[in-house]
Each structure stands twice: as structure tokens, then as C-alpha cells.
Length: 113
Image (cartoon, rainbow, N blue to C red; front, side):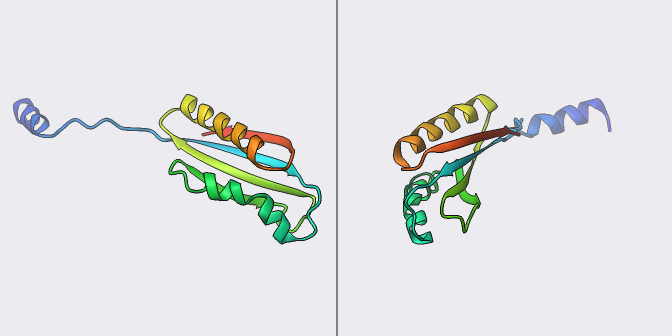
């Protein structure tokens, strides 16, 4: 293929920029007090799923300690265009969770991909 034909073909095609998605995962370990059954445990975390589970850039799930009444482990995954934006978003979510969920946070783990 000649250089002139190659240039003509490239000129006719729009230039696309690749967007590399970044992923951040934050795992929160909670201590629970006064939960007599699993219904009470679910009620304590209903705000977590109801509010942040509906956000388009977040995914929320209970990832461990499903049957334990004294602790809970929840993971939030955030998707964004840069690691810095994901860190800011996870900071916002962490602060909001600490204010709304009636359970002390024992440990927080974060990973960025």
C-alpha cells in the first residue's frame, strides 16, 4: 500500500482516544452491637445498599461474615478515569458511610487497579 493511499484512508477515519478505566476497591470491616438476628443486621446496613448501591460509578456488596451477628464486611468498587478521582470518590463514600451507618469501622482496606 502506498503512503498516499494510507494517508487518505487515515484522513477519512476519525481519531479516537483510548480511555483506560481505573478501578478502586475499598473493603470495610464493621463491629456490630445489639443485633439479635440477621434481619437486624440487614437493617443496620440498609442505607449502605440503598444509597451507594444506586450510584452509577459504584458497586456495593456484603463480601464476608454473612452469618455473623457481631461483625460485617462490605466492599465498594468504584470505576473512574483516573486513580486520583477514584481515591477522592472513595474518600467521600467512606466519610458518608461513617456518618450514616450505625456501626464502628474496625478496618479499611483499599486497592487500586
